[in-house]
Amino acid sequence: MAFKTYAPTKAQQMRAVVARLQERDEEVPAPADVVAAMAAKGVWVSAGHANRVVHEFTRKRFSRCRRANKVAEKVATPASSSCGKPEWLDVAAKLVKVCGGFKQAKARLDEFELVVSAFQP
Image (tube, rainbow, N blue to C red):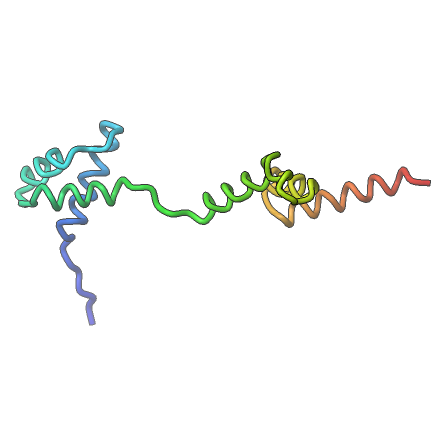
């Protein structure tokens, strides 16, 4: 049994055109440019459809990492220590951010504890 292969949709073709235009100009292409490029291929698209595809293609996606970094930066600001949180929480948040994660920060703290214990009588 063979798999069905489908021709790319107009939206997929427009996304490819937008990507090509962005590589060439490094700017967000105008919907009129997309319509002209599609007309050169022999595919008719409306300006509204091109506008929607360009907008969706160039928008920034939601990212959990970006959100987590914003939360870590918010916790690590000096102003947050004045709102009732202990200062060590700010320091811990900065350490986790600098080390690249909780496990790495814990490993560094364990190494530091060994060094400190070696110098204690």
